[in-house]
Image (cartoon, rainbow, N blue to C red):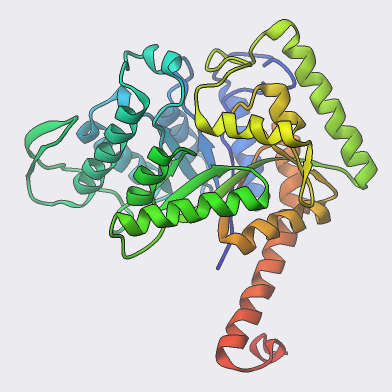
Length: 379
């Protein structure tokens, strides 16, 4: 199965290792970063959501009108708009991008961050709302006839949209989380289920939990899986690890005295299950499998996508292929110096992974056809 690569659609040059040098929305930088992805083999970029951040839908539209191939993953939190309104926004953006949109629905991991925009539901209530929200959006995307809805969180009558997505039957839906409630909601509704980078054994367990939830929901299909990492590359293993330790030193310098990196989450005692899992794994050790390094997660308090893969491009590619063998076919990666790291990863890692995946696909097809792989490849 083909592998896809997801990068980050940042709006400024700040990261965990250094403060931004300009405004929160730097149009020139946003376009330069997106173009670095398009020019170096990436499939799509994520436009993330934060309560005080630039509106990701507007940023995504800005980038989509200036690039021809790069696909868009738009993050959206259901507490900020009604699902019928959101469905029209997404459909319009799908037209602006000529059918390059995927939507990532965020339930929200911290009560404090949710309350900044008036959301006082409990975590389980938020997951219930997200699942209902996604169902409404999907129907609004595909129903040409007016319909009513009366659910736990939303109620309306006689709605039909006058704008529908370019993609048939609809754009894909992305969803993430690491709690049983997340597995249930995403297992039922997601086309792509997103996980943060954990060791192979824990990742396999999470995949099994999501697949079980999908079966329990009565799905005939199953979600695809995405895993996110922070790659740290070097020309040699020694140079990669020297760079990795410099990264952690810079993160620690920024968080000295317990200062959080963003207003979204504290450095200690995270509420969300995903961050707690990252910190629990880090407490067991710094290095797992081929190249997984947890020191970056520890330094950030388990904030989001924070576990690193450290090594030469060949080592990191081999590590990613281990996840591919578990059933992961969407790789999310983001460096700390975003433009340069995007270019390096695109030049040196993506081609290695794509080549090996194509080789494995040929070999699999040959085995199924009962003939040698060389014959299947036409050699």
